[in-house]
Image (cartoon, rainbow, N blue to C red; front, side):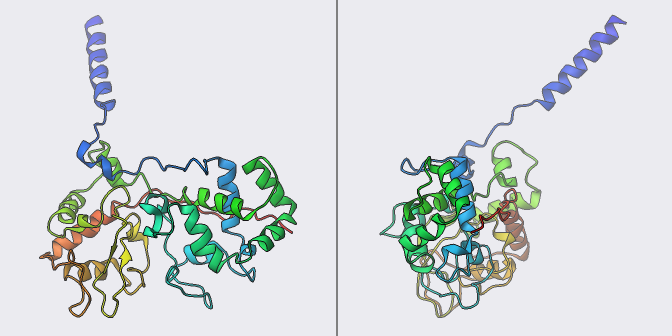
Length: 312
């Protein structure tokens, strides 16, 4: 009886070791994993500031005519009808992983996300009259309470609005994708097709030349092989790319398949070409595997439920 007991104990111990086997990250690939977002010392993180920023993000009273909010464009597949189109807003870029881009939008006049929020977007398109906006929000008791929780006092200023919006936007992060879990030691997180696609991504297609690091973007400006377009655009993140409805900075393609074909062909024959954009000899299976790999970059769902907006 004792022998059977010890035999069962040994089997359970072995099973326990198997189940509790330590996951070993792949060192050379850890640089691709989204880990921590750094908040600057002049705008430290706190949850109350995030909640305030999220509320402001969805409040149309930040716009000149009080008819659109940040989410109107940044959470929509196309620009709202009648909304002004500019070089920085054509169409509105996704804010997913905005905190992971180097130098934010590669703008020589901006070193932090706060600079972009204030000068390049909201000052020109949303709250053009900072003092008037602060006065508008200060008349709302609910906002006084939110600002006091976030900053310690109920004072409402344009600077604090920018700080809160920036803090919130830094929390819009796509992470813990199947690829991330694979890199961190979960061997079965990727399918065989996705593993083949990762190889295509690195070698045959050479996507990794521009799409690198935890954001799968070098944050640099490149031409993209589109006919009639000479301007360079920043390399977009590939995280959650397969969730999109339109592709490229101007939304010209309606499917990921068309986008992959475009780059595999080296762009349009009459387009201005980037030195790194060259035809790749990809088979149809290569393309399918590549798309399967891109699906492995889909992170956990980002919940952007509309918060309770303070009433005037």
